[in-house]
Length: 363
Image (cartoon, rainbow, N blue to C red; front, side, top):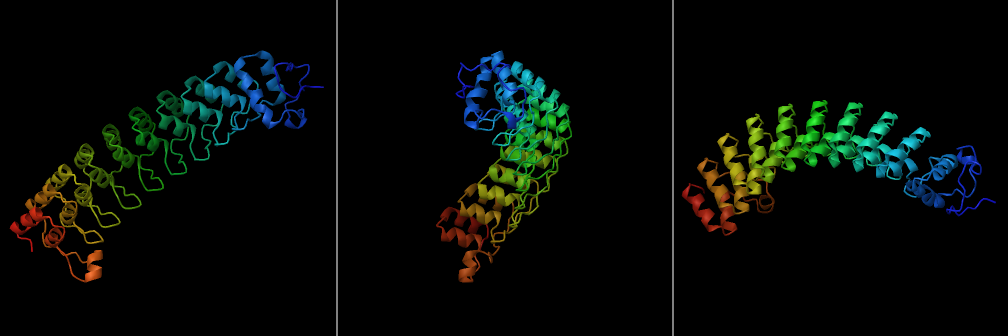
């Protein structure tokens, strides 16, 4: 009787193992709980083990859903990958995360293994449970050579993951400058928006990746696209204090006065964030100074709220309207009394700011 313990004493030679690869005809001892031990013996590079594996079910999966091919792809074992491809292993089986051998190899940066699987006609565009493809994995992990191979093999550049992100967004998010360049050259769509409405340019802005922003601008990415909250790349950059990126966007001709869903503009974002250099640049470029948000705040009242004296002085000097009344805030809803910038400064005890406002003619 065949020993079902799958120990080294078992003869996996072709004389004992069945000649068919059909799972229906396999002996009852080849259970899922045994396959982990069985598959792991592949790394011994034992020819009898591989003969047994081929005959006993080459596509059997372990508890993680990994096949022998996946294990070899993950470790970058070129010889074993060759053997398994030659033995007609299924290239496109998914593990428990939905990843294939190609995706696992791409994620691990195993360049030669990726080349083998591409040559063997593995499906380049399968998506895992998170919607990621081999290209998205490689782009996010910074594996330039693998990205190049997948592009050359005509992988779909614009597939979105479950968050709506593409390979280009993944690269831009993580600051992968060379990969962004590769994808731009390959004509990836620069203006796809994810589920939040954000583009690759917006993600690069958030991460303060100046070189990537420059590449995307040069490649004619739309820098005035708004996300689901109405924010543009300029607003995001202004709110986060990304001076260099703000300068790039202004130089490229960005619209300074687009309003978000809350009726705020880039100046309000910069003032609320306390970024005086950006406030100065926007004022120089003639941004609208007196925009009010849906809650009645202006750039000036935001500067007062965070007690930023420098920005208050900048806005006074630029001739911002000091006497705009706030008729939309919770304060007005409760009291029915409109509030001005000066009143806000007095209420908060910001005497120095209040004095500056009075001196400038605030009421």
